[in-house]
Length: 93
Image (cartoon, rainbow, N blue to C red):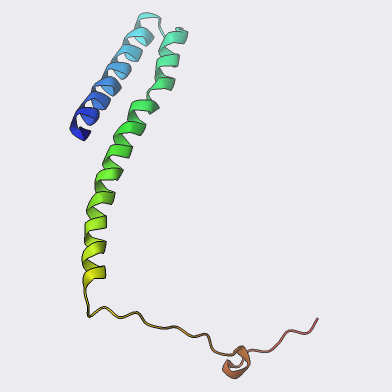
């Protein structure tokens, strides 16, 4: 399903650029429609980027699952020390 969406998004992206370029050349830069089509171009780009990012997230989720299943993995407890013992002064207003 993602491959079909990705292919269609790339196809729409290419068609919008070519159509905008054709209208721009035909009207010598004065057509409002060529500029309007340029404003629509980020929509298929958004779909392309979201599909790629979802693929990368799904690959990363598998790696995180492997790390969490490891029994040798131990969490380190962090305790904050008293600032006075470390050597910090208490500010006086």
